[in-house]
Length: 266
Image (cartoon, rainbow, N blue to C red; front, top):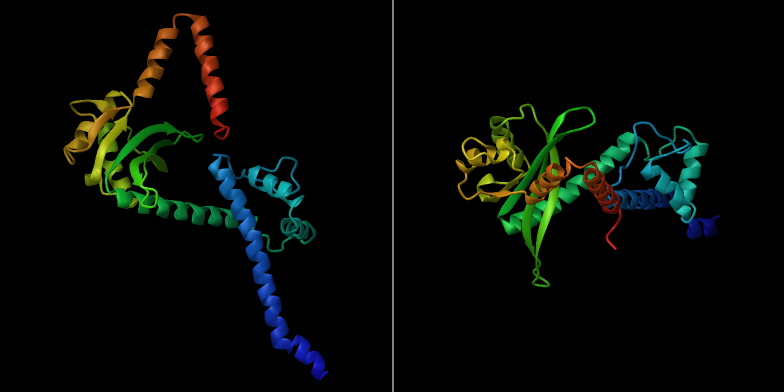
């Protein structure tokens, strides 16, 4: 008995080892789950659907990828098998937990962006609005800045999506109110903005009462830059509209672009 106690320790030591083993197991599970989520997000792929389970006929990207990983990884394989065999057990795969994980990843990415933009100090804003599937008008907020790598000495121009903001009023006054406030919430000082990049719509680019003119009253150094790609797209659309052949041609080009943009850079 004494020898057994010396080899394995007392009850407290055995329980402590079990606790540490369990902690390590969950760390391994979460690490792999987070790695899958990060990979999907980096490819701009949706993470989940409204309703899904491991045994559904068509699980969405996150669960489907975890099921694929389980064929080659014993940690995930055992975990998914345990989830199936023990309904109601802790799985860290329920949507509430997954949303919390996604939120933590979002905050970590935002902190990295904020650190880089604070080092750069000056930035430009690229804004455009559209409605989502529920017909809620949203403003996409993108920040452009120069990141200087102290180790390599290289400077890189970066464009980073920050978030979507719901719009109550889609007019110049509404934009003027929400843009500086949204930037402030994200930790940006609008007075450090050096460029406003919008399309050519009168609401955004108007020289008398457009958004860019209104915001320059607050920050004269926030120069307006036309979003030329949007102008080129409009020119192509209007130029091709009289001829059905051209409409089909440009439509095909657009579909090819959409398909290619979904793939990783080769």
